Length: 383
Image (cartoon, rainbow, N blue to C red; front, side, top):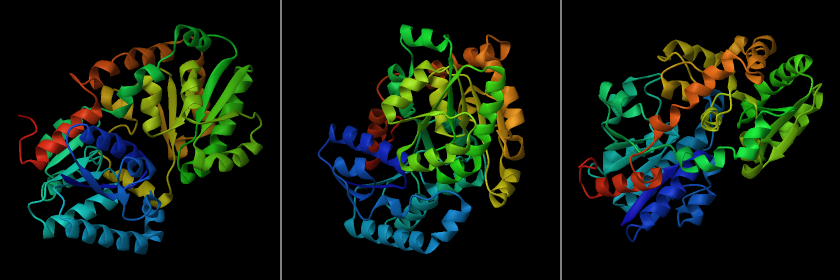
């Protein structure tokens, strides 16, 4: 079997390589398409470096538009020429969905699976119905997404589980680490984002927030897990902080900090779900450009925080745009360091996540592989 796979950024590369490994355990298979280093290590020969298309936000996309359009054409043409048995697009809908649409026009019988649903439940809900023209099955990471696609008349959609549920033992503290969470000095995590634009907008705000909190709780161990590609930017950015954080790098150091943290201040994103599954009470902030801010009128949900969406309640406080300021963030963060109703509320909410996100059996990658193979063979994956 020949499978075309197209991923557009690091998170897609992570999902893609696990899916490839699960597929190889089930059947002889070869891979073509676009992916990063992990997918390439599993046997994908990428048409070009994934970094060429790994871009987020309206303004960066506009700046890189000629390159993106050229790569869409190249990817489409090479997939059509290869005549694979199935196409799997992974997240990054601005790129991958355009490829899928073009491929479907020339190869109308080629099955297409979309791994990671676009956030049709949050904004531009009409995309769900439009996807039916070029997507046969959606593999959802969030448990409420199949119902959302059904309500919006989207493609068939199955919850395959979030990859974070595979590493709960890594996220959860040992008895000794749980004791560290309650011991002084309290460990406060600061997570200003994984993209340069997030760092630019939030790092100074977070630094002043930490200073305000430290006036009330003076003995704090401030830990900032830095993503590798932004490490130098973060080191330079915290030089102006009145209270310097301890910067750690690497996945192991990051999760050790999660397991021992008392509370966290974080940019909105997947990290909020990591923190919730780690049972770390959190305050969330986010800022976008003035142009992107206008999209708020298209948003149809009451929260942008993933754990809140899964729980169906706004357990984690969030502060957006002008509200993401040191005064409001510090006021929300301080109670999470003590034994307070605010902390108890979040901990009770986090206890519900396991049941909401658990699969009946198997891992997300295994479930995804089963559906990909069934779809490639023209079978109903739910049968």
